[in-house]
Length: 384
Image 1 (cartoon, one colour):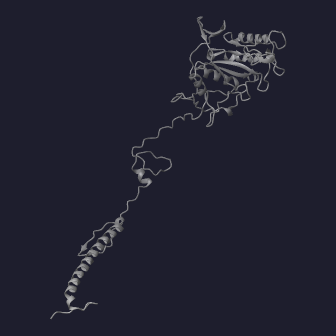
Image 2 (tube, rainbow, N blue to C red; image 1 turned 135 degrees about the vertical axis):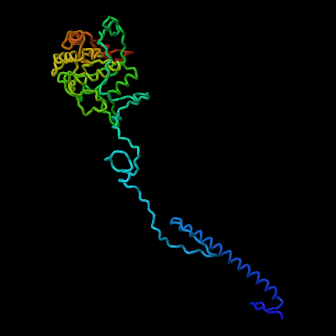
Image 3 (cartoon, rainbow, N blue to C red; image 1 turned 90 degrees about the vertical axis):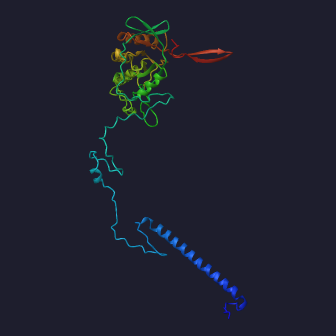
């Protein structure tokens, strides 16, 4: 007798065999699917478990059949490796005890005794003129080298300048110079030696710059008053670290320091009686406040202190700067022909090796061109 299986909506015996076959097939698929899902779930669980416990101590995982053995609780003591303390580090190094602040880096076991700090190098005052300059050199020397030169006899003959050696040999000299202002002011020191992060420079850099660009002479403006009083320069406008060779004790010591520095590079110096004082500019070689006797005294001071082999590069004195209110050859009170002879002869009496430089009085002249009158002036050296 054929068994009859009842399923929802299926009661026909004719379809029973087909249905039964379908049911067995479906049941197999369901079982297979269940097994697959179980395996997948097991694998996923193992992966997740492994990921979660990756930072924890690893333990053996046992599988019994299709079950995962429970994770045993570890009773082993926690292993912890402490970082070495400062005391431990000191016990493992041969370096001497240091009073420096502790650092986070482990000192080397071969640490050597510290060496003295090098002398700091100048950081200000470099003249940027697109040349190699003074790279790698000491730019703040305490002294400038002495070239061992002798004071020559400076001559002016037939419109040319010569330096005559003791054996009589005459060497022609040509001046390519600059003016370095400042000592004629109340500061009593050349401008620019205040080297700082923004501007300024040093004595060494000035000398090196002139030498690099083939300048061979410096005109140094001075005042009668400061020479007589020997007024010290203002130290607040000099970076003493950058220019330690510059002696600021007195006015004359500063002049001597500048002359020696220039001489180290073969640069000559022309001493210029620029003003009577920093407030009395003067229009001649004297004034009411500063009579001619004071100017003569200033010339004596220069010759006594600077006419020697040490200052061989001083070529002479510019007797009066721009004597604009003088005359020439009229025998008047301000006849500069008389004044120049007076001052020049005083210089030569004490230092016959120097040259006397005389400026003209730059008088005003007129000229008429096509009915129009024009004024013109002598250049300072051409009004003699």
